[in-house]
Length: 65
Image (cartoon, rainbow, N blue to C red):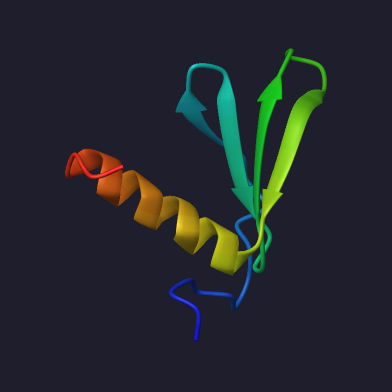
């Protein structure tokens, strides 16, 4: 079971800061940089990979790498 609402994506990019944007298509997350014209350095995270990343961030915040 996924912790993400997969009923549909947002189809809108959201600026996260430091040149990083995110989109969710209803299944996977797309993270990318942009030069103002095109997407660059694209990474796609499936739900289970996104969950693993969020768990990693939570461990770092608690000081337990």
